[in-house]
Image (cartoon, rainbow, N blue to C red; front, side):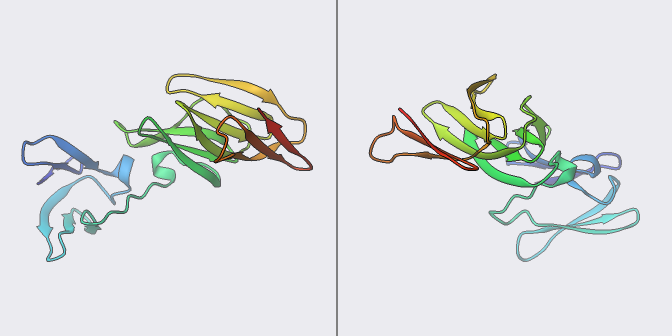
Length: 174
């Protein structure tokens, strides 16, 4: 179901009225928040009549889209999940998706970040300053690397072996 409002866009809810998604100007890029009429088309997508125009919302798709409105800054180099939370590595650092606000928020790593690799119950981040270990609530640098770390590879036959590709080097961590 889609519930429109005059001041805060559209709230999508399931049949128990549990919110599924909030579509508005500040978080989703809707042209404006004043929704006058909602129309469901034959493909299951929503058309919104607004104060100053129409908006087409593709809800019947497996694709989800985030951009700078959702806090993405810089060029995304890698994406990974940790405990169902989405993380991105970019030239601005590492961010994670706050599912309540639908905004990517910095976690504190501001080094240029090239790669994210799930490893056991944590996430490893390859950055210009070295390798970081990320958990759901914290992060710490575990390796200093002088020439940047670009890629992390886990040996599929021996999960205890990590390969780290640098600018002019390849490192093996056991």
